[in-house]
Length: 533
Image 1 (cartoon, rainbow, N blue to C red):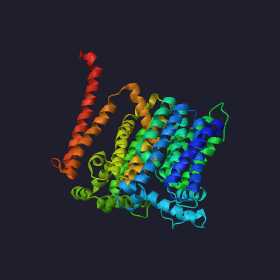
Image 2 (spheres, rainbow, N blue to C red):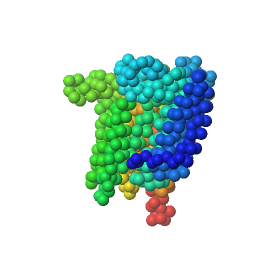
Image 3 (cartoon, one colour):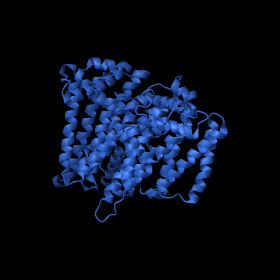
Image 4 (cartoon, rainbow, N blue to C red):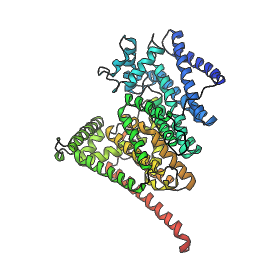
């Protein structure tokens, strides 16, 4: 965004009382002494609000963006405070719930960050292996630094919740600017609304997790890339600012998750490659074949009888993938009795496609609606699942109707985002072992690109009024109803329990019916006038 715009004194004037009020409230909810907590929370809040205000003003979104950023912050911080205070009373009698944490990783990282902050050790200790809570050390070091600067006297876990919520909300101004420069203000509004409201990002942004930081850094890289492309145009003054944003966000992302840096870098490199005069349909065909071959290759490599020699480069990759996925499949099988039963009934080569499909559907909405649990966890489960099931049809249509972007600005960029997003979703499903927690948060690392795809599908539907969006939701509803009955029979003993293969066959029949009838209706409607219909 160039140099961040200066925040006017008038704006700083009303941010200060907000920071003071919030700081006083948070300090009262955390361990004494209150004054030290009040100073730390107020200072952190004021600095964070100043940064958000500067980024929002620089993005030029006006009151709309300001409201969306405020909504995003309120949702994330409010959810974090409510869960931290409510889980000890309304959650399970387990260490994470009793400490007020949704995620085990956040609980462990918080504890180790405080241990490091309270010690006399250098923060560089976070990058050593003895601190197992953070795989790469960057987020652990940042968390310990925050404790040392703003809460050095007492462990106050809400400090990290506050910082995470502020950091997560900072993604919106960067996404607004990048999307707006490429596709206009209407696309910015839709994309940032998705950002602000999507339940998975709200839950992650309310916890001391790495994904909120990665999403924000992805948005920064997105804007830096777009600004760099603009500055390299003819007759445009070249600026170093986009390079600084790209490099800074990339370095920060590398310290938190090198894999996320590689994935985001792949999106930008493919985009840059496609910017040349190359027919995009060839790229779509190539990626389709690559994905198909990869899935078949992985299915084949999972069978130990077909394992390739480990000494070859392909063998090394195959061995790594096989061991990683086999471990996650094993964890899934061990943790679920019905999955064990299904695995016993299906061929070994069918397990990978099953885990992939099951992982894409996680968190499973029928299970969230029916599976017995405490009220607070059921609310969390339903919100996460409903958000994903509202989002998923847009991504599916983006994959199915990628050719429709021919008339849009930067069509090849949208197509590359669509394919890479789906490649990442499938990889997350495989690497997460179809787990309902790890899999969705892995998937959320590339949420910025998924949100852009969903934005264009929504804009396309608004312009075309295509019935295929309704049909996609109808297909999803069929899936939810069929498997909902299965979960009802399993947990509440309502109705007969159908065999799993019969349910899958029933869903496939309903899907084929929807697709074929929709296709036939469209053809009859288009050819009707010529046939006198």
